[in-house]
Image 1 (cartoon, rainbow, N blue to C red):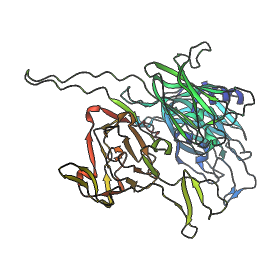
Image 2 (spheres, rainbow, N blue to C red; image 1 turned 180 degrees about the vertical axis):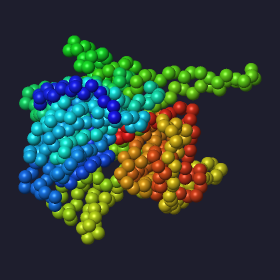
Image 3 (cartoon, helix red, strand yellow; image 1 turned 30 degrees about the vertical axis):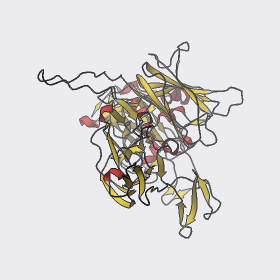
Image 4 (cartoon, one colour; image 1 turned 120 degrees about the horizontal axis):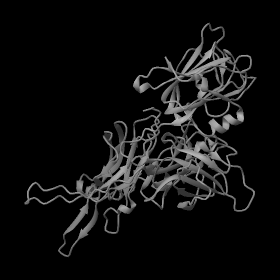
Length: 571
């Protein structure tokens, strides 16, 4: 075991600990960031996983388990002759700067002594002691500041000899694992890329750091919510220092779970500054004008200044309220222009023309609002509270009724099944009596087994459409994968060919099916992470040229970018 200079740690009181650690650094051991318990010596009275929970511990003196009084923390059994320990995989690789070893509500059964070790697992690094033994008191937060360490992926908390700890915060600086392509699109406001809120007007109900967390959270507790305003023309704001300065293209403002307390609208500005908090005199550039927001929804916006480099973003909400997540999609560097053509091998062979610069499309979450022009979504969804399991509700214009003797809910007419060729139809005739018919189409329930794509970004080379029939796909992969597959859709222009201004891509979960309207151009199904079976319902006549029209679009150089999803892998 190797160690650092263990004499340079500093205890901080509650106010200083919150100022110098909790507000300045990221809790690398938070379950919200994907941190997890790998091993422990004992958890007889209370689970070790409680150490990583979001929020302050709670106490219910009237609650008991089969092992004794219930505690919101980690508690080991009595009479240990050595020590107890727990190994934690950090949510992100990072440099550690301090801890909060919190014994709140453990009084008479708290751990009296603790120390901390760490390692960097990808290098099979030896274990380093980064905090020597310190005394802990009952029912108190113990903030300890240490000199910034090298990068670590795992920590071990040791308690002597046994007892309880409610929360264990490991404060530090995220060490991002950037893609090798610095022109790749990614979320520059993601905590896993080192982004950090550095100032805000108010965080009365929930912390502003929640804005940059992965996922969409579980309820209103893990977003950013300000107090109610009572003045005219009030506004609240937050400044985010991006994980890296970059060129910003898109933003997502998510109001998930905020249904009666979402902001009426929001705007975005950006600046470039070498300071953690930009100077008050700095000039801000508007990148999103004031835009209306809706409850419990992901709002996607194209930003107006894409060729200027920024380091900070300021979101202003009007007049107040709650926002779940803020995503700022951009690049660390602009793509290098590629206008080179292949040289001919001889004067007789002409050069191959270069493709135009790629048109980058960012795949966005599949929502009713954004997908409506192209088709319908096949899924269940939360319904308004019912007074009776036999009640009929109307949600998203879909009638939901009781079924199966009250044990199920039926979502009626969730997607139309269209067959324009229930009998042969005349499509062309001339003065000589020559006519052309589209044959009668019959239902075809089929299954497609789709292999996952081998690389991203995804190159769109072909689009197809079914002129006379809707087409529905429902995945059979099961599970809760939020990015099971991807679709690409496009409307037609007045000549019936793809109108590329309307081309969009959507990310679909394993619990979502989709239906294309007749005549909507689309790419064949794109499985993302694993081989996926899709049940497909369409109507076909058996005449290939009538059932499906295809068009090659490779010359348009369209690339679909999937923003890397949060992963709890350290490397």
